Length: 362
Image (tube, rainbow, N blue to C red; front, side):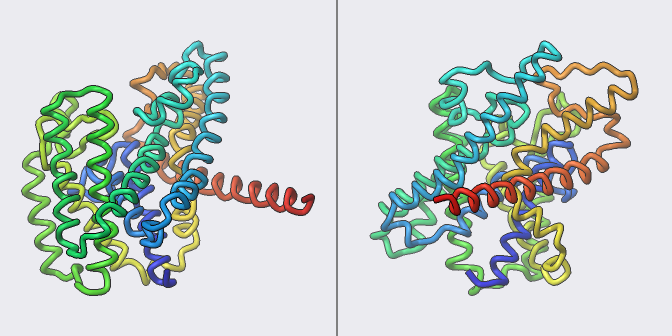
């Protein structure tokens, strides 16, 4: 991986996690692209960009690599947050999630990942793990096909068919898992396709393409209803629960336009942002930011409520509550990003020191 590509990927990861945090604070960094309309698809896309073809012929090695990079830290975080959730329960009487059991610890992560609300955004990690494992198997199966467009059509049918099939079969555990897998596989392949066939061959960041994307998004905005809670979600679909209102293909289309805008933002901002250390740190700590940002929001809100003598109900539907959102939303955003980024760096330094110490002893 060349240096420039690596730096752009890191900036794209930083942007993606900033979009996730801003989404949980209910504002968008891109005005025409609402929170929850594309940021998770962007993470799947980035994973596809980073996929290496060598693993198609060594699937076992790929599985082991993904277990180490995704599942091991996931279950470590889950263990920590079970402890934190229990401590909160002892003081508040509210258990923010499912009580500890074999199912909640090992099974629920692969169903919806919301067994612990304080780290609920980590639901994405087991989903990504399943998606990448299925993706490499499918790529092995399709490796005999030399025509790139045949594969693109195959994954496009999967992606655009995910929501209609889900609605036709009905919302249950099996269909929800299948829909999320189909949806995410499409964006992993699109990321792979972009790097292999577009990135260095076709310039898609011209004024013409910008105009096309903005026009398409303005048309898609006609389907947006996320102005008041009773209107529905419109472009802001909720993948984890399969909430798309009446939409069938709009979520896929708005995810594609959002991904293009993100790539465009990195492309035009690269020379200005490539040496900003904070952005590098954010990009390098997306896993830790994803894991910890809701808990940091929770702590900040409790502290502010305590000093203002305000009681707050942190029931399951209010876990993202923030103090005086009209005035504090952007302060939350900055503070939460900074704390979780440097918390991630601190965790990494501890891990390196412990690993170094164990290696020396051996």
